Length: 186
Image 1: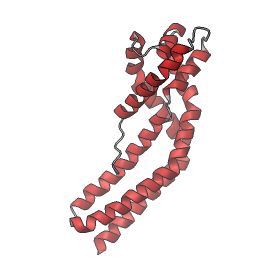
Image 2: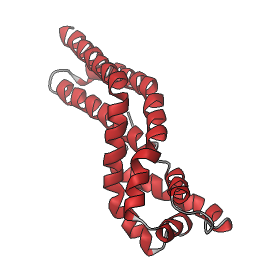
Image 3: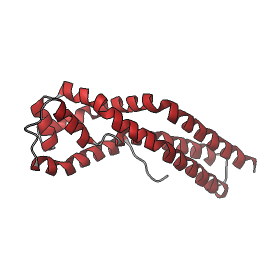
C-alpha cells in the first residue's frame, strides 16, 4: 500500500477543507446564525468523516507492515513479493468493505460528538470566526483541540462500528496469516 495517512494528514485535510470553504462562508456571513446552527455549520465544514477513515487505514497499514516485517526475515525477496501483493489485495478488499460503514458512522456521529465539544469551548462569536476566517486567533484554539476531536469521533465510531468492523479486521488477519503460512511451506 502506498498511502500512509497519519493524524497529521487528517489535520491537514480538515484545515484544507476549511480553507476551501472559507470563501463561501465569507460570501454568506453567519451573523444570523447562533448556538446550535453555528455548531452544525462548523461541524459540516470540518469534514470529520475523514478522521475515522484515516484511523481505520492506519490500523490496516500497520497490519500489512507487521506482515512484511515478519516475512522479510523468513522469505527470500523473490517469494516475498507475490505474498505481499496478496496481502495488499486482502488489505484493500477489507478497506473497501468497511470504509463505507466507518464513513457513515463518522458523518452520523460527528454532530453529536464534536458539536458539544465546540459548544463547550467556543462562543457564538468564536464559532462565526472559525467558520469565516481560518487566520483568526480562533484557528489556534481549534487546532489545539483537534486531538480531542479526533479521539472523540474515533472512539464514537469505533463503538458504533465495532461489531461490523472487528470481524472483518480479524478475518483479514487470518487471511494474511494463512497466506504467510502458505508461503513459508513452499
